[in-house]
Image (cartoon, rainbow over all chains, first blue to last red; front, top):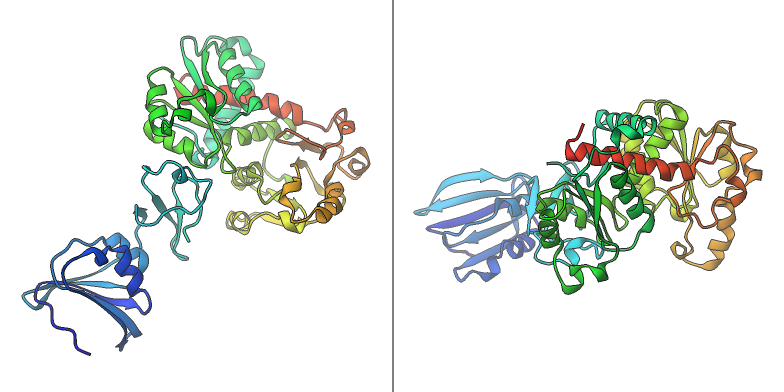
Length: 138
Length: 303
């Protein structure tokens, strides 16, 4: 299996195996019209298995979304075929319009113009709660 | 400009200061009778709650202020589809402070994010009801003179009862508080609330037996066991009487027990208990008015 090298673009590496597709969807990569590859269950010396996403083009990505799905992931910016910069992500303190509250009694269930805001309430357990009704994110 | 949406927003010092103001109001009502002259409280009740609304309105009138508002969603512009945010912005033009009751959880927070005047959460669904907790705290203070070292029994529906969770959160911050959680298995305190007790370094015990728990209690906070919370009628019938407080059960209690209830009561406290000097639930409602007066003054920045 061969995926072509990227000249100018982004590689999201070290994604916990199995989380690549969720990240792909939440980042809205399915809507891009440039080449994007999800590589699942790749061998990794450090992680055993990992997922990788390669984006052949320069796009803006939400580090909050990447951090929320997988704080272990790393983002590599590729310029002229070389890694120009590399950075890690962390669990964001707040998520805005990334996930929705599932509580039918929450005010966001009937006022849909409200921003869906979730706060990190327990870092250890990666627990987020809705700003409005404090229901735990599923 | 500050609002009150959740009891946890108030520090222990601020609660102490509110209690101090409320006690001063009780002793010197005249001193406060014109403190809010020219000020208006808007009571925005998107669902009916006569008791809470009247308590807020009485509080504002006793401070010399005025009241405007509505008591059900049908008589508000939300019936025409107006958002909570727009209602809050619009009411900010007419009033100085808002008390909001709403069936949806988080609605008062949305109002406070959009209003230019303070918003008090007067109950948002099953979520928060901070002024009920303030009423509870003043009642405990007046009856016991302290919070530290009390053994507080909470009885009935401890799973869905927001007043119970809120009171536990508030009392968690005092020293030596012990909780006795009395409920059927179906209605036990959720684990996240128990975790908060443990995190605060406080003790709790869980029991199904009210009579067994009674002798150790300084406070007994009763709540209603609602039929609709049970999976079947058989369980409800089996359990409902165990959680009804009557004079026979009270013979096991301390002489200085304080019996509290957020009201309305249905049958969980026998009316025969009302004449017992330990029954403090109607005073609790009165204390709610004093704490709402103190809170209005605090949020309006009136000394």
